[in-house]
Length: 280
Length: 269
Image: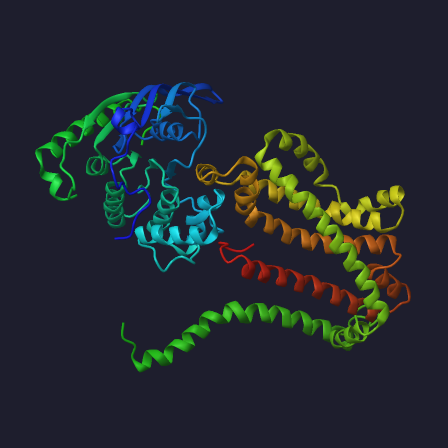
């Protein structure tokens, strides 16, 4: 197997043994100003992710779960509260926290290779080294042979593979994913989920995964945060105690899966019931 | 699917029936126009000094092209056109892009665009002559004025509509604010900028010709006016044909160049 950037060769000294969480968000609030006045999107969320943890965030549509992810990424600032990664306050975006969006936002004027090598080029990595590392990543996301294609020539699933490779090449400790498979057909989604798990297991990155699919959250995560209807608060945190590696079909009938699924579903039903002004 | 020989024989006819309206009907309208143009003066419906027959015009086109006076004047028109267009691009694209990314600048410049939009730009040439005389400054100035608005507006819209997540992706991959302008905003806005530029090319030809017809001196417009003064209707027709053909070819070349130069572009400019 090809070496993969971020492969853990030996137990990392320092942060992990000291028990410091990878991400710690405390009392995060976010208020937007709209034409009708201030709107509270997020109301004091506390969030902790241990190093290497896979955490999903689910919640009713429009509840502010993506907004919270953007705050973790440093793309937008919280109105109040504290967000730390490795105990360092988050101030702006950083290649060490990679993000993949639902919309396939590749650079349309760059080829697959150009998209994947983009971040390394900004860091001044020499051309031949960029290419070499890009080839590994393109191989990881199974797009070998498509290096010279432009995004317009790719399917949705392929575009999202490129987006994933473009983020992973920076070897981020934290991977933020904003409903990354939401706009992909069901069959491709299953394949991409399995591949994401493989990559995660090999690289032990900390993943925060926003989704509206309970099934997806349970298949992928160690822990599921259920958020309330807007303004978003943490309704409940559930540990997903299913052994890994997981088989997406085999877990479906297990008592643990059924229990969690029922519980999350009930919570979401309750929260959706509060949705009076914006149905759907 | 299997195709029987009978199907194979039917297919071309079917395709022909599909193509007929697309190719034949436009060709028909052109043929009727040219036919009338040829027939009307020959049949005596109009005077040949008003509308010379099409075939005579084509003959005169080749004659005009070989005159050194024509090529010299064409060259000076082309120079003003290119200079004006280049300056308009060099100023208009950065201005429009900055407006699209920085609201205060938009608020500052937009009222000027709104007010000047309906002003017929060729009419301004008289003011320009009053201020700067009938030289290069006025002539290039009118071209700049003419194509500035479509270039600024398209650049503004292009930059303003850039998908925010695309900018975030670049931020997340370590692109600083200034670098984002050049590496992300500009290429992302490029499809719209190029559409505006196509419009600007057409307008710039129109303004350069219009200014020369108004203030004479040299240039292809002035050369045409002199021919009209001398009663050379045929020459005027030939030159108009040449100018129209140049405009048509420039647009064709532009579209082809964009298509080949930017293979990533979706749709047309």
